[in-house]
Image (cartoon, rainbow, N blue to C red; front, top):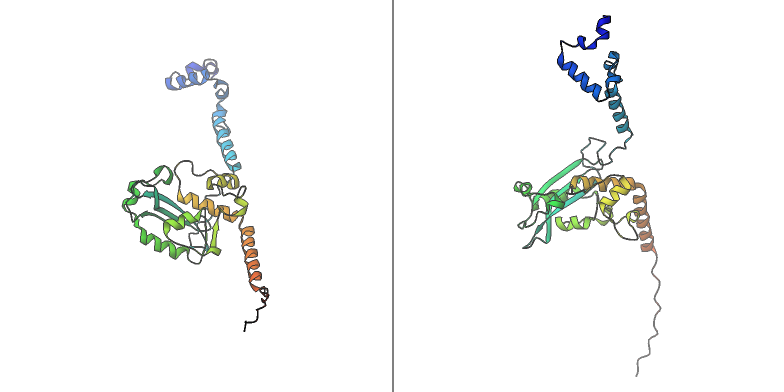
Length: 266
């Protein structure tokens, strides 16, 4: 036994692969760490420490607010919407609906469809829309999607960013009191001007979106999370404005002064 400890090479003569591996580890500065056999079986070895440290670091990272925290996919009273457009007309400079996504208040998708426009698509605008020709081969007809979306959003609060563009593409309208547009909310404006959704997501939510091709699911979720973050104050401001308008209606109109009529000439 003593001879084996004095001459470690003899100990591994029957396994040349192990001897070669040991020499490589020694040349890389790992000999000292591997010299004690008990360390190789210790769960707190270098490999184990790296694994536990990485798990600790990941635990410190804040959760992504765009990932739904509930599996509930029901149609809630509040719905988020986002649309992606394609180009139609002879030169493709007119927008038409190419995809529409609806999410519930938890961020779960309740409707997501590619749309086949009435007119021929000239520009798929893939770099922004993420839509490709194969997506529209089996896409639903525009009129079908329009009807289905109208039924889902009817009577519900609709959240989105620059919703006027989505309504224009869908050829739909919505009750003004039920619209929550993150491009128009006063606390999201800068010097009275609306800001891009990606900038609001970065600043308010701490997430990056729209780095390249847009995703209507991600954008709808971002708008919904922005709304929920300011929901209490947002809804209060709407109620206060409604009360103010109601008071103004109840005020009696001022009586107009009667103008003196001249007597008719005889």
